[in-house]
Length: 327
Image (cartoon, rainbow, N blue to C red; front, side, top):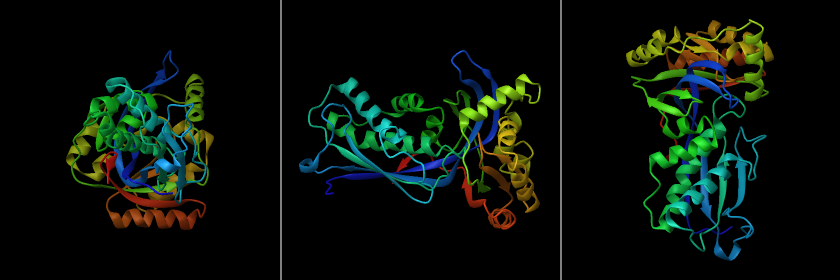
């Protein structure tokens, strides 16, 4: 398809260095206290203007998106239609620009492409990161058509909250303390570079199912919440000492993830045996994240775990990394 303009953005994965889960709120969400760190594993999201002669946007809708394609090593199962958060993010930006500056006639239609490398259903916010990248792209692409220089960070953050709990952090990136559903963010100082080995499972885990299991375990007295005190994590991040950070890694969701997927205990044991300083289930899982003293050890963890458990593959990465950015 011919095109006249295109933009591309990077979407970075995240790991929860610390995650404390409070009881369920009246709205069904849980109160979270989390320390997020962005990782240099990334997807690529591209927006491309459709040739006006081939504009097939549905005139009965306000969406200017005509098509979405998904490719890459972790693309399986990712929706390629309007249910994808990337599509929703484009629509959200256009709607907000229209509300601020008035509806514009003849806005160009666009098609979207996602190249996936972040694991899906792996607790690493891949879908959220893609949505954050799409917010950046739509703002840069459509704002000039409204005579605007862009929505600005506050407006984009607001739109990110409406798309999902992890979208605001993946928009921001770096290292940050998240509270509420994770959308209330405070940047945190993190010195140096931390090396991670990320072990991917052959089958995903549903985040709502993990939350449900956590509530069940707590009701039965089989799991306890952790005090939402991040001071030790903050000190470790400031020190830049991986060994100090390894001592305070924590995830309240881990017992629920292990209950639903007991074989992850074997993965955690194998990673530590291979030289990791510490390992934990990442977010709602089933991905496991291992903090390592250096890049060579991180690669050894990936290789050794795959050798011992051939169904589990892995990647190495570092953090912190940027949030969603145009490239």
